[in-house]
Length: 469
Ligand SMILES: NC(=O)c1ccc[n+]([C@@H]2O[C@H](COP(=O)([O-])OP(=O)(O)OC[C@H]3O[C@@H](n4cnc5c(N)ncnc54)[C@H](O)[C@@H]3O)[C@@H](O)[C@H]2O)c1
Picture 1 (cartoon, rainbow, N blue to C red):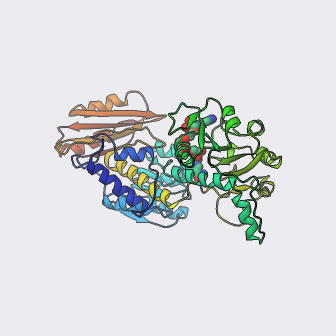
Picture 2: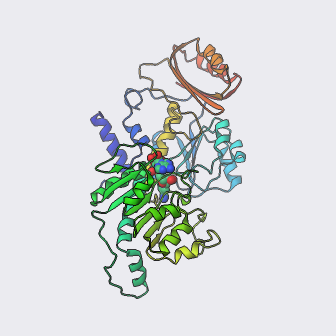
Picture 3: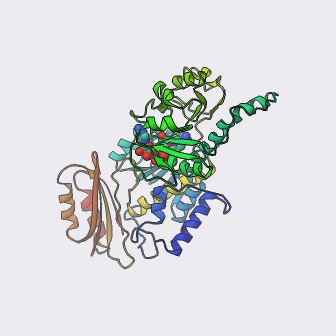
């Protein structure tokens, strides 16, 4: 159970993330909550010994693309040197700036290619303050011993709320009425406009977003069914169904919250639309490949589907601007935009101020824990390893962070070196060609730290070494 102090800390973090004590809600992700309520010993509590790095200057962090203030506050609070830019940088400037920094925080526009990362001589960690990480050469970063973190779930609540808005908007044909009145047409109708109370929502994919949505929909008086490839405990009165077909045949509203995988490509296509109730509604705020859009267009034209909301598309413009959502990008674009009771939004499901704040807290915390404690839990390109904190009274202890190529015999060499001291605890894991060892060793004189570092640094297959004490 969390202590009153932990709850107070959590409340303060929420308040900071939300920007206002009166803000209504946020959606902390699993990893965010784990950080707040981690078991004793993993906590950066008053009892934990703050670790300082050996042989590293003050931590320098380069933050680009207007990373959220919540992250800047976290780094300033740690005493790191923060260099902040509102925009991304041209490649030559980026190469110059990245040379000396230990950490970099970016969003989607900064490309951290092999060329850029090769210039980064001191880089320890990359924070992607967004969902996607394909702007970073993840394998090359791992091969250099650089861990990459992102924030996949900080915007779950924002997406769930958008979907709730769309359910009511579609049921009441609000989009069409609004467009009509904007062009001077008064069209007061009630035919085929419905309340959502008592209707059935079918959620495909009951993960972070699907499960949030389930709770909100029940609060509106909807019945909730969900289909997922994994057996998941139902929230509220919702019910898991064993097949997609059962969900399609029973739901009035069908909403998709699955990842883009080969299995989910065109998950809804002509046979699935045919299996739905006449006059049902379809919502996709997951990924653009999950719906066969020409099949949706046909189903809407025939009247089988009464309305749809799309937030994501197979091809999306790389920047904002007029005329970009066209047939040149997706061949069916003009046919799609001509349909009635169809809400089209430009991939804004997760785009809220609250989500940006929460992303700042989540990635800022992950980077700080990696820099200060070596914990790589949540890294996307790296073995996930963590050890509980050293206690304050462990004065002659050193934490060894050793990243190496995943080849036989390395641990034997390393343990021969560490074996001259008392190994209190260690944890190692590998992912592909990279392995990562964290070990806490005691009985280390301050004077021994340098030679320990040098010995580890000279081992074959080493990628990077850090010592914290
Ligand atoms: N529109 C936006 O701005 C926006 C924002 C955030 C996330 N997303 C997208 O929303 C989707 C869901 O995100 P999430 O955070 O809830 O993901 P999640 O990983 O928490 O949940 C996905 C769920 O889908 C299930 N699943 C996987 N394959 C399935 C299949 N073939 N059939 C049924 N269920 C399947 C998984 O078991 C899991 O429970 C992702 O595609 C994500 O990229 C969109």
